[in-house]
Length: 212
Image 1 (cartoon, rainbow, N blue to C red):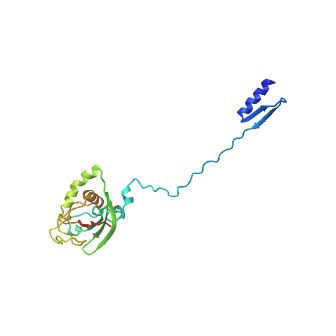
Image 2: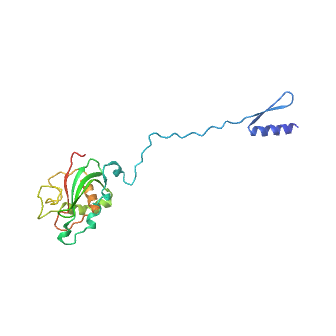
Image 3: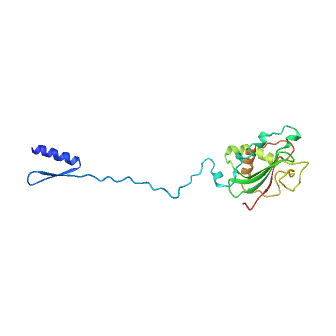
């Protein structure tokens, strides 16, 4: 009988019960039922963090749309020079409007499809590709781009948005902002510019030193 009571007492303890022997030989059993706590409610952050895309963080931090989303994308690849005077077009005149960001510059441009037909492309950005391969591949083409000169039909040192180009694609007397090489190399890559006839087909009018 004592063995049976001991076994029963052990079973009750394991089950979360407390058994207390009484003076009269009986046993008082108390059930210890734990109170289950409610699961913690995750509070909503009233100020959620905006996660920028890792593909090109620079585009998310500057104004304007990427040049790849404009008609400047691959323009010279799509309209290459075929040796005729008619293929001297399109021409592109470009003004840098904001170079305050270290990696992405903002610009306005005019595409000249002919001497009488133009298209404005405003407020686009060009973000530098600083990979070693891009720098190596772009160095030679950048040298050709900066060496463009116009023998006839030009505005001389007066730099305008066209249709007549200036005598030189780059103003050699003007100090260029830091980061110009990266910008120009990416501009050439994005537009597909290639050295062609003895004509200035793309030129930079000026740099807005005050930014926007």
